[in-house]
Image 1 (cartoon, rainbow, N blue to C red):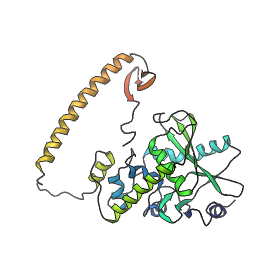
Image 2 (image 1 turned 180 degrees about the vertical axis):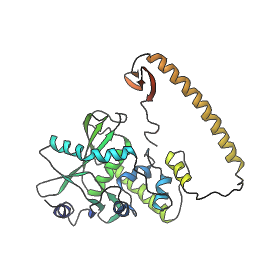
Image 3 (image 1 turned 30 degrees about the vertical axis):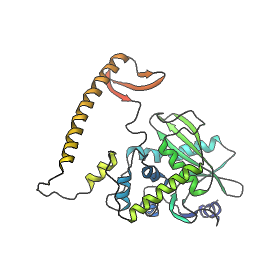
Image 4 (image 1 turned 60 degrees about the horizontal axis):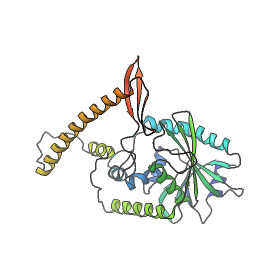
Length: 307
């Protein structure tokens, strides 16, 4: 089966529009998504992404900050995607699993989808999609076979289902390099409409030059840092309220840092020579050792699992 035939077969006249076949992260891929919202962007629009904020996404869409640079996590996720998808296909020989082009929703060119794989029926119609993920640990991943996946991935799956007009997304994840699991996300019309409304409002704000408020997301701070060009050796007066807020935040951060250090000390003292700190059978932190001594205490919770 050729990719041309697949594109035509999986996107009938009444279905989504095929924009093309693009390698994620390439200039062509960015260009296809420039005037719309993709699945990896909808979580930021909703304020759910740990990687991107509404503020940073808005400025990227405006061309005011550069596209997201590929991180090691993104790189290895891309490297492992074919193997994870191949494993999914191997475990489900009853399904015809195929690569996917980039789509736009029928009548809504601003809604973009680029799923990892499609599941086709005998007439080459898309009946479900497959998303491949990698994760360092199982934080946010519930019991296998359920829809208990990190909320930002759930938003991506629902967005793709909405764009393609199908009801089921299979999520295959490789955790810690050796723990393969599968989850299933089912289309929810109410959630889809909330996402569609949020995306429309974001697009309206882009067109109206309404910049989102600065928030505490790391991506927002990174975007603000990136925008000034050069350095003028001048003094800039700031509002008194902003000065006071900054000083109060500094004091709170220092106090929190002291408290966190004390908590980590007590936690390590309780662990002793153990590896994991548990509470009510839920992992709190993991102790790593180098040359026989404690090297690091890794919290089970990430800094932001949702916003």
